[in-house]
Image (cartoon, rainbow, N blue to C red; front, side):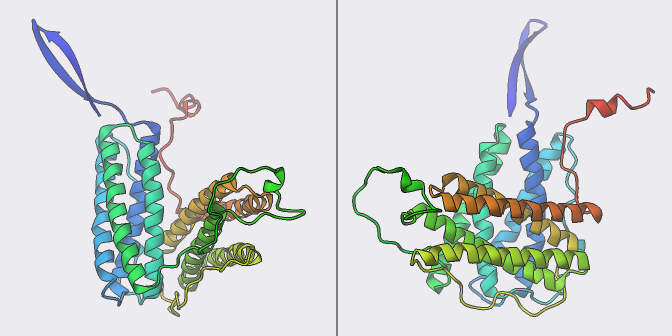
Length: 350
């Protein structure tokens, strides 16, 4: 954001333009965005090189320059402020000639999920932006993701592969809650699920199906046995969470949304570096923790909020294991942080 200051120089009023420094929140979100979209750029180059569905190709082709633009824009702003850039991801993190690891059906589900994450991150990042150029960047990012999401949802609906949340019967008139057993979930008679609770369970199932398939593919192709083991554990956790959410819907006599079709191929040749796969897994874990926390905060039945609390703890532990693996292998780049004045005080005087 450029600010103007007027000063009098030799009897003449002159305007001095200066730019406000980036806030801590702006530094944080620009750094994360740069790293995130550099990773997605690599993933989508593999998707583009291996997909078969001609209806899918235009969307994937549109995504890559979008990610490229976002990497360039965030790099430009950070450089302008004299800030270092993330190491990011590039050609060394992908094998462009590797066979396809996922099916076209999975590419659809994965892309829709990434767009939904993009909408969530974009609105959050915009809400944390103050300076005009940063706000402009996240406004444009949110608008372009929204347009792509609407186009992509429409083509998936036409193809009949967009898994929608359950249709439920509801009362036709609004009412007021009269009893405290509205919150009950462990003992006694449980009230039926609210529409928002059904929606959250559905999203929990869908997100874990997409994430679990991704981790299964990574497990098949990771070079390190340590990374393979981590991905296998994550895929098992995802299946467990799908079963928990599905069981809750089934007890309410509600349908469980499921996909039909193969998602992961039998390839054992990795299109990505272990570093990229670990980064991707840890990012999805963080998004999942945020989703569960939101669900827990808005669930009005005790058994549901207790489930989310338990699953958050399990997911946090899994994410911490992933970060430790990245640290151990020298893959975790330290984000921008404040200068430790205590450490400066220990430096020799020149």
